[in-house]
Image (cartoon, rainbow over all chains, first blue to last red; front, side, top):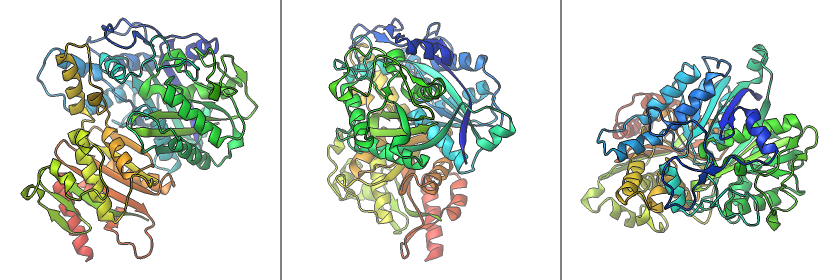
Length: 371
Length: 223
């Protein structure tokens, strides 16, 4: 059973729409800027990729404001679509308010309430399922949605992803000394950390049969996927890269392709020393020849649970446009990444298949193959 | 055929290994933390005391489920086994503990060791490291404390060949239950029951201990 994407949309620090994100990344422009949502004076950084116009700690959570904007102008979603929602912290700003105001009420069933609100906004008749797998959350959700369709359990799944820049996550990443001072520089020789970002996106996946029946054009196909864990460390990636190598191997096998079929790679590319190094080692191990790799996190920051879905939509755009974007903020490539990454856009060969990788705390790895 | 090869349940006083028909009231001889020193883990669990309470509970439940299924493990001999979980509230208690601590300290410094557990997959990450689990690891919830979605997903992971074995479970702050799922058990391999036999017990709802006892009855019906 083939799995195709028929509709997608995104809201990123560049604004609403895939084109807004694509156009800015393609010219190498970053949306990471000084953060004024909360006091950052004691943190490692005061920069992030945030979306203009969101109201913090006022009525609706940041992610619900993002999702409302996302679905407001989108084409209708089939009401019988199954729903998967990927996030790491969802409406965590509501909990922040409760703690800051020293309110004692319980915060039970927050996930159920959140799912109900997302289903209502999207117009689907299901309460859906929330998927959380650290910063691989949306890649895991894409894999599960594709699995539901491939196994015949569903013929239409809406994957929604969102995460926001809050004091909760910002203070946490700062405490782990994971933040770049100004703006993340994935795969750069002088990189020293990630920049947090926020985003929301959705992709509607269908079986090819249903898409044809409804006369919906395919934006791209999920050919295969592979999920794995490093089983090594809670916050750091495996230095041997064996977890990501395992995930890529599974994804190629699931897609029934071989390594030479992969024309380009959308990397997780957070900008931390260890993540980027781990990824390059994995790619060098799996692929005989260098091929274009890029990361969009120098542009919009690391959007955590939303990262994989934004990156999937951009990868489908790369296939359509026939060129990979530059890695934003890349000045001097790390020697081990040389020849893989570039500060310039590059053309890809026709009929290129994309590999997209993500990784997260707990050693969680994901690899998705797109065509 | 997808079968359940092991099932364990644990709370702060007792544990149960269903296939092996074992119920242990450990409160009679040790504490919740002391359980880690009673041979529940087949190899030393490095820095177990550093884990938060939910992670300890999940790691105990996983150790017992693997023992019930007869699956040996070693942190240094990693295997392609998945680990998925569910509950109603994600990492809510850890979230509150982290942010309250940060606010109480004047919103200047936060503790990385508390932030570490503010993901619903954090207990799974700890378990993956100790038990050497390199398969798919993720958390899913419909917002209810129901095992059905993770059981369906475990079956799907195995049917599509995404991994060799799957541990799937549920936890609250006080108790946890984990199943070991296997596809096409080897000839002679003892299993608790087929997944189709398990669904009625899972659909009943109710407490986790009651569910484990229901599976005890299924087991007894087979003996």
